[in-house]
Image 1 (cartoon, rainbow, N blue to C red):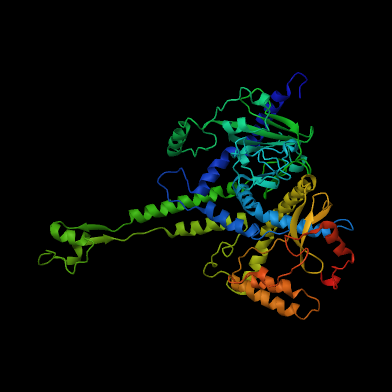
Image 2: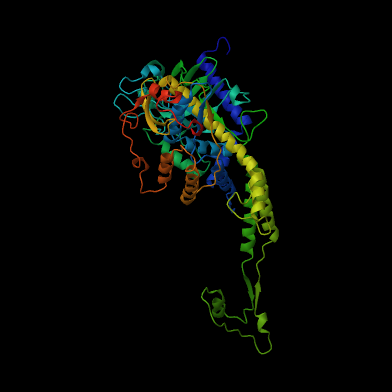
Length: 574
């Protein structure tokens, strides 16, 4: 920062440089075109479109995200076994409750279209956590997502008071410092949010002095133009709404100062300049990407690689359509031989049994009418197949992985299909492994926020070493520790309920032969496949620790893992 430059001006300059870095090396101006391809919006007129961009994206994403994401937690030091059980139960519950799977699916799509898929980590509120606003009435939360009247001023359902969260950020709203090569090298990051000025004025996290003179100068930036006249007209209607005044906010998390800044490029004051309570596992953001660039933070999207083939196959289909139209049946007829009434019978869609022709005494009746047969060059179909093969080679998918059989004459035996699948899975597994690392990293950051902020007791059900379910009271400090997280990149081909039931029956047959196996848990899991059975009602367990109404303390639960009365008799099977 130059000596005479004010901090606010410095950060405004840094934001502009970050936007420039994204535009020059990330080619962000191309992203909107790729998104429109995905939506089915093409700008070439009078063309036949085959939306390969959409079909390849929807074929890839289901193969790399986790249908039922779970983490396995183990302690990295002795004595953390029982803490790991509680942490694992909390993490898997938060993954489902906070919609982490949906956020990661959206980030995978962002990576396909833009090269990078960023996501933001937070706690308690969407626009920044400040512990000094913590409520005495509601545990571990600040309630700054509500105004003084009790009305909501934050609207994201996945952000809950007193809970960590993770939300996908649009790549067009995310920047890093100019010249950043790797995410773990970034000194800071910033992201843009469009927020109604009324909500900003009523948000207590922003000091009154910083909000003085703030104006809502934007009315359309929340809606992104699609570069079409129709979209421009719709945006113009949106701009005419008088009560929709928005402010463009930039939220900056800086490692050097350990602070969080919120500013608007059109305002002369910081809206926030506070200590950053979210910097516990590095910067509070994670960035997904699949096509690594050797020099720059902004990577190349899959859409960029297959755009030439997308345009080529559109052109091929358009030429084939023109040939078909030009080759529609054309008729040459002798007007002296075929009258208008009889000609109408040939052109009439209704079938006519006979058409009268005046051919004279010596004229060949076959010369009265001549038909031209249509012809589409077969090279067009061959070119289309070659184009699709090029696209599959770039992405790394076979026809089978796209949900189709091999072409006639291709591989059909189970052994050959397995060889092809195994080879192509190498690239898919690499992406799935990247998704697993992302999931583990987010959960690790969540845990640090939980350890630091959950000061009041909470209750959760945990499976103890005795195989029984116990309801345990705990605080963040009691379960704090260093843990290792593992996510199994499972196969993503969907299984139906019948397959799951069959696998469960086979496993139960094997488990019944092993002494000490917890058959109660297996029966409850098997019963969950039947809609008419409530597994929780199969084995009621009265007593302390066996219901949420009578939870046990964490110290008592931890004693079960140290040879206490609740310790397992079969430690090798735990």
